[in-house]
Length: 202
Length: 202
Image (tube, rainbow over all chains, first blue to last red; front, side, top):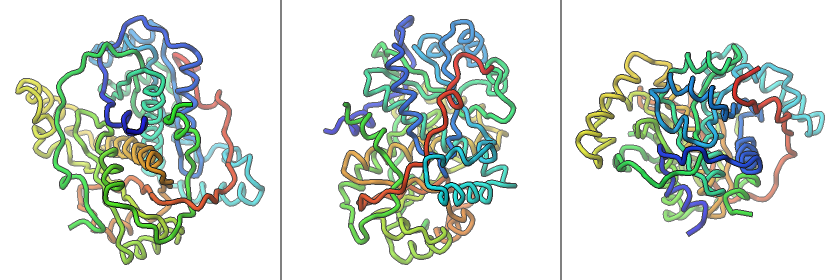
């Protein structure tokens, strides 16, 4: 079995972490680097990663997240955000390493694709953040950590706690830490026929 | 280097596939199974995967996707969709394997979390689809395929082509196939300081 497929299949949302376990700067750097390699449309790199290790900030977040234990007990709580305005901020920098004609082509395409499409701008943020969240979960797994993707919290109140910039949205959290091995029962899968279709919907 | 970290770091959006390469049912099954293992909030399994292999359907999609070559040349075009109503459809089935009290608890939480929150219902779809898209990219990589995540197409027209159900949204495509090895120049990364922050935003 490949390490990749094994990590995908054995991943579970871990809610019980070894409290007080400190993640090394090297491991955290590897995980954030993996997140940065997750794709974004037109390379707009619209994800933003807020790494919360400070206990006081964790306490404030926990209070507006149903006091779920993984908020305080994980080694790093990564608040996955999206910059909804990434498409209009100095877009040439997203193509700075490419030849001049590609820079021009993509900066034009970016404006044409997003301008005036507010729902698309927001959708792009959640799409990008979702992909990066999964990259974090995979990289953490490769380094021997467990993770918990989360969206059970008061988004508005967390935004206040972390002083979220106005043009950002919070997409979700990924809690990273050393799991205790304790896992709740599986919920179960709905049938393949309910989620997979071919060529066109019926 | 772990296989996982290598796959994360070496992944590139592949636009040039070996045309006519057929993906085996076994490989496609492994990839879709990986997607089904991607997490969803409250286990609502709100992603929907439409696998387009039929040439006629691909032609119609290509015509509303700027004729990008990967649409026709990949081995399987996976249209990543989200069922926006997943939170209200017989939610007990998402927890069917769990003890009765968990079933009751989660079905209540699901309704409480999504009811009346239309933007959250949609955001959930894009978040889930993003995570599943990355799972597909990783599983494909494990099996020796390359991939291209895409959102450069006319969402409304693709919805017509594939007869998208009314309560679904298209989130993106993932094209899966055998890459030719030809890759465009890198765009480049913006600085870490523009995307990573600690504890609270400044």
